[in-house]
Length: 111
Image 1: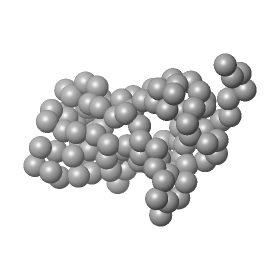
Image 2: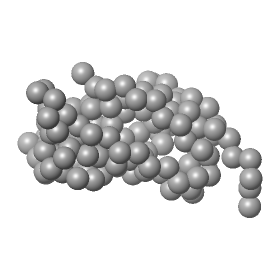
Image 3: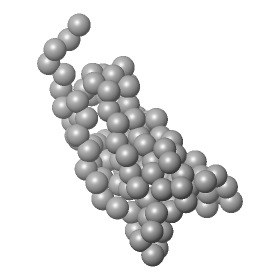
Image 4: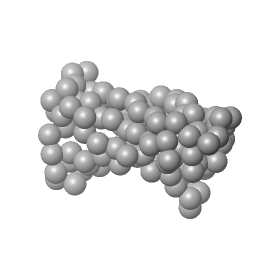
């Protein structure tokens, strides 16, 4: 079962978060050879998705980083979204490791 973690993103700002993936025993999962994907959507069935830049940050310690640039976050309308982070092994086995709500707060200062 995936961890639940809610995120807060300031529209128009850089965003970054590190997630540690654990094995069934609780030890960090070695993510060597894994790929990562992460998206947010208004609802489960929404056809519009906003993708995080997702990568294995430190394979040995099971750490993943998801990011949005300021330009990416500026293009996301304010509100609440659902998101998840999915890993795929080199054998093409997929697993959802984190899910939750993303709250995008409005940008006040604009250039």
